Every structure is written in structure tokens, then in C-alpha cells.
Image (tube, rainbow, N blue to C red; front, side, top):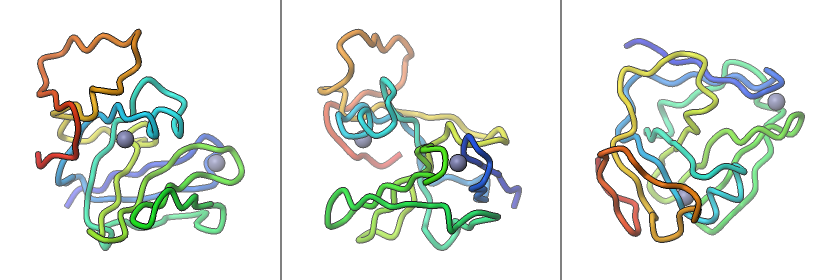
Length: 135
Ligand SMILES: [Zn+2]
Ligand SMILES: [Zn+2]
């Protein structure tokens, strides 16, 4: 399986995942918008067992957003890295950290009910007012 490498802005944290996301989508929820500082967050999801660090795991800080969800970021540069779903055992990788180009692309938008008011979704991808959805 081809691998995808990702890294934070300061390059201290480096991760590796198979080029085989179970789903890829854009989340417009207010929490993703806050955490990433962006109009929305593009993520690719996979089983946590397929996620690994290549370097810098000790620089990763975790914010416990809820009982089920941890948000990970680089403690050195602040880059948002991934969210970890504890109950379902998934990692949702922020696609913006990828250094390699994944084979597939995001295929849906979720939580469009809370999208940034200035952000117009003009692609033809499926839209869901809430989420999450299966791919
Ligand atoms: Zn960093
Ligand atoms: Zn979200």
C-alpha cells in the first residue's frame, strides 16, 4: 500500500498513513472552523491502527474536546493535525498537513448548517446539513 506522509508547519511532527482513507470530506462545523482557523476543515478518516508517527510524537498536544473526541496539534507551531475518535477508533487527518497527494479527493460536505456565511459552496459534492455521514 502506498503511504502518505504529513507534517506540521515546523516539521517537528511527521505522520504516515496509507493512501486508503475510508472517507474524505469537508466539515463546516463551528468547532472545526475554530480549531483550524479556516472556513472549513478537509479531513480523511481511517482506523487508528493504520495511523503512525514518523517523528515528533512528543510534540503533539491533545485537547479533549469531548468524551469521544481528542483534537491534536503541534505544541511547537500550533498546526492542527487530526482529531481522534475514541469510541469508533478512528483518526480524522487534516488533509492540509499532507505532503503527498492522496489518490482520492473529498466527496462531501457536512455541517453546512454552520458554514461560514461568506463561504459559498460551488462544487457539486453532496451536502449534508449535519453529520457525520458514511462515504
Ligand atoms: Zn509543528
Ligand atoms: Zn467539524
